[in-house]
Structure formats: structure tokens, C-alpha cells
Amino acid sequence: MTETAKERVIEGRSRYKLQREFSIDRLYTFHYYELSKSFYSTGEKHDFWEMLYVDKGALELFLDGCRIELTQGDLIFYEPNAFHSGGAKTATNVMIVTFDAFAPCMSPLANRLFRLEKDELYILTELLKEGFEAFDPPIDTLFYPQLGQNKQAPFGCEHMIIAYLELFVIKLLRRVNAVAPVGTLKALMAAGDNQKGKLIEDIVGYMKRNVAANLTLDEISEQFFISKTQLKVLFKQAMGIGIMHYFSLLKIEEAKEAIREETYNYTEIAQKLGYSSVHYFSKCFKRATGMTPTEYAKTVQSNIRRKQPSGSRKLSDYSGRDERM
Image (cartoon, rainbow, N blue to C red; front, side, top):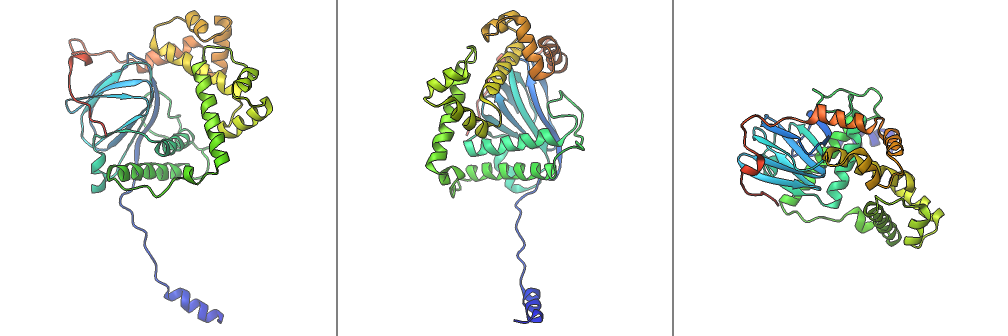
């Protein structure tokens, strides 16, 4: 075929326009908050969608007169102009994203509560990673007024946020509409990879259950009948950091939660988590977070704690029904 003939074939080729059921092009907020158990919001409503995910802890919310309790792994969508209020029942980590999405297909998500499945949680995790890269100030800065671009963000970071957020919404809409899944990556994984993934999951669970102990690499390798060298390599490949570093960060997360619970003093927290002294605990905490325990507590209290209005009713005075899938 001559070059001219090729050009004629290409020119006559029909173009297929890809269909979009909805689009998300504008974010209002993107937050990751560590809330103290005394956090309380008197309520708000707005003319855009809000997605709230509980990464740790528990919330008690009120949505148009109905009481809803969210625990770790729960996610709720507030439709535009839905009045919502509530507070933390314990030290709680939440992810909040608000956005525009003007499309009838969004309606099944309105004020609906989901317990996330593994593939959905993976997408949400990737979305959160991009959120931490994309914005300045960072999304865990407490109650900053508006999003700002991080000039040092990786290429396409905001584009990835759009892609992950739309993909996440599509996955939930398919679940609501009972569309059968066509297969997952997990189903296509080799048996060896599945076994490795299960091993890492079991090891992480073991470390979480024993976070108050001073586990060593020897103890973990003996517990799971794996050599120390192989354990270090597999864990680093799966989690991106060394196994003992990961264990130390688990302790810090437990310490942060205990501080927000406001039940124990720093000496008691250090003892409960197996630190040799409160001074060593403070040193480890600052190395991991950039703040001393006291500085972290002050940040949480000054930025998050909102006093319940005088004369208002307690959350427990309300009653309502849970709206779950």
C-alpha cells in the first residue's frame, strides 16, 4: 500500500467518543484529621458532595435527624445540602473529601453508608497518597481554609486524584446497582504472591496485637518460621519500609491515639507501650512526628477541640436509625 493510500485509510477511519457518566473536576476540601475524643461539630450543610471515611476510631453522626455510628472501615457520602453534625466517640482518624459532581447517576450514593471492601480500600489508599503529595499546606494540617497547590508535587498528581476519586465512585455505584464484578487483580495473582501477601498480613496483625511488647526480628522470624534475611526482604518489598521501623511506627500511632484519648499521662503511655522510660518515649515520638508528646497534645487540643454549645443536648440524648448497606 502506498503512503498516500495509507493516509486515505486513516482519514476515513471513524472516531469513537468515550462516554463519561459523570465527572469530578473541582475539589473544595481534602483532609486527613486526627481527632480527639472530645471533638464535636455543631453541624453544617453545603451545596456539594462530601465523602467521609473513618480510618481509625469511631464517630457518632446525625444526618437529617437520623443517628449514624461509623467505625473503622466505614464511609459515608453526604449529598448536597444535607445537614450533618456529630462528634468523635474515641480518638479517631478521618479522611474527608468534598467535591462537585452534577449527574443523576450519583443519586444512589446520597447519604449512604458503606463498609469498604479490599479493592475499594486500595483505591482510597492510593487517593490518600496522592492527596498528601498534591497540596500545600498538607492535608493533615488542621482546619486550613482552602486547598493550595504543592509546587513540588510529582507530575500528574492532581490528575491522579481525579482518576482515583472517579474510579472509587464508579466502584461504589456498581456495588449499589448490583453489577457483577468481572474479576480482580487478586484473582489473577500467582499462588506464590497470594501466600506472600497472606504472610505479610499475618505478620502485621501479630505486631499490632503485640504492640506493647518489645518484639525483635528474631522473635518475629521464629514465630513465622522464616529466616531473618528473607523476612526483611519480603517485608520491605511489600510495605516499603523495614519491618522493625514499621513496628516502631505502630507504637507511635498507638501513642498518638492514647494522647487523644486523654485517659493516660505520658509516663503511663510509655509504660503501656513498652518504652524503657518516658524520656526515651518522648525522644522516639519526636523523631517520628517532629513534635514532643506535649506539643502534639497541644496541637490536637487547640485546633480540634470544639466545645459543645452551652445548653445543647448531648449526642446520647438523640435517637435514630442506622442507615447501612
